[in-house]
Image (cartoon, rainbow, N blue to C red; front, side):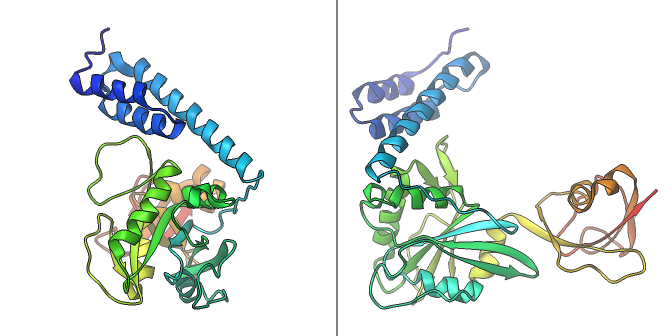
Length: 310
């Protein structure tokens, strides 16, 4: 079956041919993928492009690892989600980490105080969220010894929180961070995201030190609203389980938005799924507290769920 590629595809192909460095070729191939036909006859073509992109990325990452002397670092995810805190020198990341989690990270008025990632745990209504502060980003960060490994940690997080200093030029500072992530083949998710098949990461911008409005393509919040903003960006809800005749259990359970009683039962205990009879719900997902529901009932934030078995 012909792929019926148009003029735009032909121009994108030319850019791939003209690309000189592996990084340029990756961007050109990602652009080619975004303009390639999406019908069934073009599936093989799209798969070939994706494979080329993947191989080139592996090659670039290996070369960067060699330059860094083989340095590698990974942080095990703990809690309901992992959030990466990034920003330029003296943007206030450590202060924010301390405020969110109670961590005792060194704070100073000189740049690059944080040499290695710092970790804290944020409590949100009983749900634990891991916050990882990445050392300060700067122009050329991806080419530094540890830059690739640090950005890889952010790339694997569930949410990237970008801290910008409201006393500085927010647009320019944000652009530096965007470019460093772009070099690491990560696209930060904008409010109005254009069609792309590059790796996309959920992103939230927090303005620190001074409240300032500026043109920003990402969701923005002030420091006082950060906890709630992080939670809303993670697309999670928290619910409580309950044993008949007893008070609701603590802590709550974190679920992805749209989760059902079955999803909760699978997390709590496999026997609940095997022997499920019905569930009673108190909360926003039912019209009347104590309503009886089945496996496929969709839960909402704050629901209390009492599972009954056979």
